Structure formats: structure tokens, C-alpha cells
Amino acid sequence: MGNNGQSDKHGKNDLNPWLLSTINSLLQKINPQILKYDGYYSSSKNYTQKKAGQSLHNLSRNKIIEIGGRKYQIKGCAGQGGFAQVFKAYVNSDPDDVVALKIQKPPFPWEFYMYRQLDMRISDKDRSSFGFAHRMHHYSDYSILVCDYLSHGTLQDAINSYVVVGALMEEVLCVYYTIEMLHILETLHAVGIIHGDFKPDNLLIRYARDDLTNGEKDFCERNGPWHDQGLCLVDWGRGIDLHLFPDDTVFMGDSRTSGFRCIEMQEKKPWKFQVDTYGLCVIAHMMLHGSYMEIEKKASSDRGYVYLPKASFKRYWNVDLWKSLFGRLLNLNPSEDHKKILRDLRVAFQDFICSNPPMMKKLKQLLLKQKASLCSS
Ligand SMILES: Nc1ncnc2c1ncn2[C@@H]1O[C@H](COP(=O)(O)OP(=O)(O)OP(=O)(O)O)[C@@H](O)[C@H]1O
Ligand SMILES: [Mg+2]
Image 1 (tube, rainbow, N blue to C red):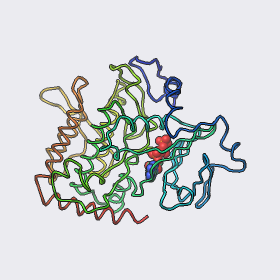
Image 2: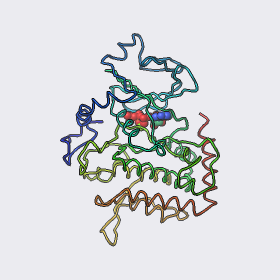
Image 3: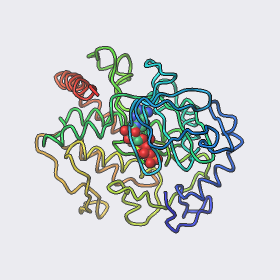
Image 4: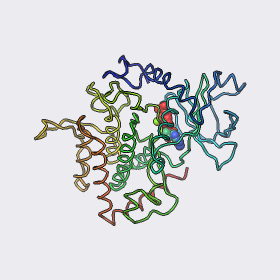
């Protein structure tokens, strides 16, 4: 998260929501709230100072670290980013109590604030599509976020499993995960939250324990085993809480995430929900083509031009469906209600699967196969 030279006056149209100065001034304002959140533990000391001889550096397998009176046994590294390391750990060495520890240096309480906003705003029915944080330990040198651990890898892993063998993900799976992503953004944007880092490595895969049912109703309404199947959005470090800004706020500022900079960022124009909807298009493109999305302006009869992906669709795909997804989401009109567009697209994608029983059967088979091949680790 770097300073890209934008000013950070709240409510102005040149606001960069990710500047450290923006986040710090928001945190200062909401600190009294955060202190009261369930699971928030703050210490003015260094972790290393407090736990003499213990370090959060180079954590090796089976090492036990103590945080806030609990012992966590490290079982492996789940991921490593610029500022964070994520570990799988057993609480008090109990293999039935598995958590993800996200260790950040310097400390970064913003992500915990976002997790608590999700708890307050997302309905129980939809909550499993978003990661869950149990607690946050805030020291002066580190912060440690304790989250539910999901053991089935990310959507990026699923995409890679095709890329490494030179294959493409089956279209019906691309349709299914696109439905999941549309549902996630619809739910999130409706409660005034933007994720801001919508990438396939931030989408964990969820699998149902029970056999998936055939009923279209369960599928469309996300009931029964279909409720437990799908995706789970994590990594809220770039999350934006729109309730902290005036209604008409638009943002400037560049995510600098290669391959995921929305059109507005590329053209130095203000953006809002496009940061997420563009991410969705890139992910759909990665699933379909196995590569990042490149876009181009194409002439259109009514608007002069539209943005569309450069890569052409395979003839045997359901071209109309994908054309409407990319055509609509890459060309959002700021005055339109984009949540309705997300819903209409989701319904069209759902209908595609539900109107075709062999398609539903194939989807179930592919999800089972994926579970068997990706879940052995
Ligand atoms: N709850 C979890 N369960 C299982 N794996 C997880 C969990 N959270 C994160 N991971 C894995 O760890 C990786 C990194 O986590 P995350 O995306 O939260 O951090 P990051 O991208 O390193 O953070 P930052 O963007 O702040 O640098 C994820 O891509 C995923 O593979
Ligand atoms: Mg991440």
C-alpha cells in the first residue's frame, strides 16, 4: 500500500481509500468502536518484548507460539504476501480446532474492522461466502488475525490445475464460479462494502460435505448442500466501507495490482464498484482462457465504443452469456444501478445451468472430481 501522490481529503473526488494516511485517519475516528469489538485484544508492547525469546519470524512446522493466553501449533504456511504471512495452526494442539493465523508486520487492524462490518451487515444465510475472523491481537510490532481455516485451496489453485496441463476449465465450472462471484459482489455492494482486491487467490473454495442435489430450486436458492458449496472471499486489507464516506464519493488511486487495474484506474478516472466488477471479469477470463484479460475499445452502434476482452470466445461456448457478462460489467454507466445488473447476470447464468439437466449433472461430477484432486494436501 504505497503513497501514489494523491491527496486524501475525505469526501473529495480525489480520495485514495488505500493511502496509509486515509486508513490511519479513519482508524483514529473509529478506534473507540474497534476497541469494543468482540475478539479485539490490544497491547501497547511489542510481541517479542512481551513473549521473551519468542519470535513470529521463520515459524517452522509444529512450533508452538503463545498469543493472548492461547497456544497455537503451526502446521504449515498457507500463503505469503508483501506484508503478511498466513499459517495453518491447531489451537492448543487440537487437530479439530484449526485456524488460519494472518501475521502482519507492521500491525494492520483495518482488516479486522472490515471482518466485523461483515458480521454486522451480511445475513446469516450469506455469511459463509465471506471469511470469518475470531480475534485480532494487536501488538506494537505485529498484528495477528485468527480466522476460520479453509483447507481446500483457492480459485487460483483450481485455475492453475488446468493451466499446468495445458487445458482449460470446463465451461460449466466457469459458469458456476461466475454465479458465485456475482452473488458475492451483489451481497457485498448492497451493504456498502467494496472488497478492493478481488483476485482468484483471495477466493477460497468451499465444498459441501453431503452429496449435491439435483433440484434447481436448491441450486438457485443456495439451499441444502449447495449452501456449503462455492467460494469464500478473504483478504480484507483493501476493503472499503462506504458508510464512512459521503454517498456521492468516488475514488481515485491505483491498486497497482498487475492485471487487475480497472479501466478507470488505467485511464486515471474516478471509480467506485468497478474495482470489484473488473476483478470479476479478469477472473472469469482467467477461468475461460487460462490467461489475464486484455481489453480493447470496439465500435458500437449506440455509444460510440465499448470495452470488450481482446481474446475471442470459443465457438462452442455459450457466447451470448459471456458477451453479456463482459459487455455489461466492463461498460458500467455510473448512473445505472449496477446491483441490478449483477443480479440479472446471475439469474441468466443460473438459468443456463438449470434449463439443462445434463449440464447440472456435469457440474456435480466436475465439482466432485475437483474436490478429490485438489483436497489431498
Ligand atoms: N482462512 C484461510 N484459510 C486457508 N487459507 C487461507 C486463509 N486465508 C488466507 N489463506 C491463504 O493465504 C494466502 C494469503 O492470504 P491473504 O490473501 O489474506 O494475504 P495476502 O494476500 O498475503 O495479504 P496482503 O494482501 O495483505 O499482502 C491466500 O491467497 C490463501 O492461499
Ligand atoms: Mg491475498
